[in-house]
Image 1 (cartoon, protein in one colour):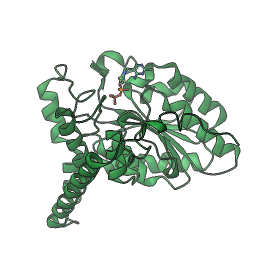
Image 2 (cartoon, protein in one colour; image 1 turned 135 degrees about the vertical axis):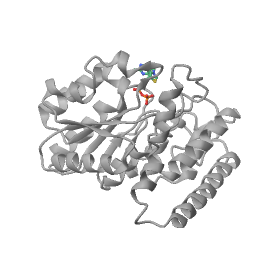
Image 3 (cartoon, protein in one colour; image 1 turned 90 degrees about the vertical axis):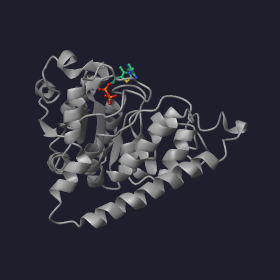
Length: 306
Ligand SMILES: Cc1ncc(C[n+]2csc(CCOP(=O)(O)OP(=O)(O)O)c2C)c(N)n1
């Protein structure tokens, strides 16, 4: 969680300095969700992410150099700089990829889960998405298909209270995302998304269900994005009192409080110091890395079919 926060804080700084082209979407505030779910994935599991994907990539141990390189569009990026911030992908680690299209990852994760079932394996697939995704047809198609075919997929909603500038109170007619799975017969749970242990516990249950052949489930993690929809968003739609309250729920602080009697404060501080140095090194390496050659513009466009 600390590594994600430090990385994303640096992303905000480079966005403000206009060092990077294109839109950047940070994950600060939502760390407990990635860190509650992703470490429970096995090597043969899969997941799809959104344009807010750096935190998921870091939780999956993709090296910081490769993520920063991708954000800068450099050859050292995990996709050779061709995906950019919104499309970090590393299939060798089961990260099918970040999606710029809202709800785009749900049918894809469902397909990965169907493949697992078809091949008789017990691997699972996870689809991360925001609360705004429930208004897309793809969300409903994925849930319907997953329920019908008993796919081992876990849908993880990171409900950060806003879809772009629209508050959930205004757009979520069912009151919660968890309530929306009932017509599909998919079990769901709403959890405190600022508490990494609560997210982990819900994920353990959902993964056990999927691996046992009991089909899909949904976790709605209630969380908050400290940044805007994108870097540069002025966030005038967020009430200051709301922001202040969610800051008191910070997942890093909550973690520290929860482990206070088991882990030494000095040890936790030293992790923060070493992580800060890692982040500086990763961004410096990305700045200094070469751009892809023009001759590579048309490579990696199609996957060769044997
Ligand atoms: C299919 C589609 N429609 C619209 C957009 C424009 N868009 C980008 S982000 C966003 C809001 C999504 O909010 P949410 O799913 O809650 O995710 P969050 O950014 O809060 O994590 C929209 C509508 C898009 N990227 N894709």
